[in-house]
Amino acid sequence: MIQKIIITLSILSLLYSAKIYVVDYPGQADFKAYKVKYRGQADLLVHEVDYPGQANNSDEKWYYVKYPGQADSKIYWVKYPGQADIKIKFVKYSGQAGWQKSHQLVGRIN
Image (cartoon, rainbow, N blue to C red; front, side):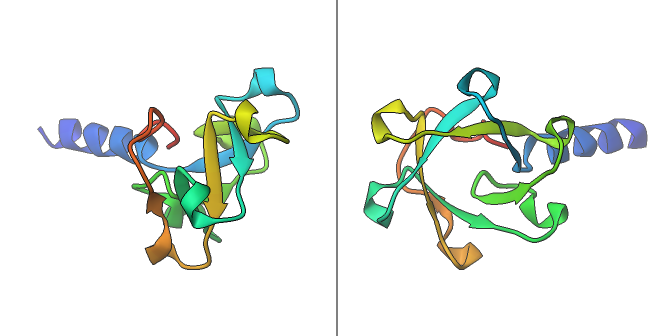
């Protein structure tokens, strides 16, 4: 019983972390993102964290990893909003971060 709980918690911690790797080509990405200037334009407000443990349990807290094998999601930054799967606005405080509206990627970034 305890082993099942530990396995379940391990799986959940992998599912709910946002460890991000930026790729060089769109075909390598899990999704394409565009950085917007204003909060109202964003699908997701993102807060960048300093440590991987701070990224757990959310799509909106991102920790950038050095290698693709460490990532939960691989993103490609596009030049134009029409090319993006998601529009991102970076925010200073973690309390400001979160989804702005319903989106097909909710729960899939982590």
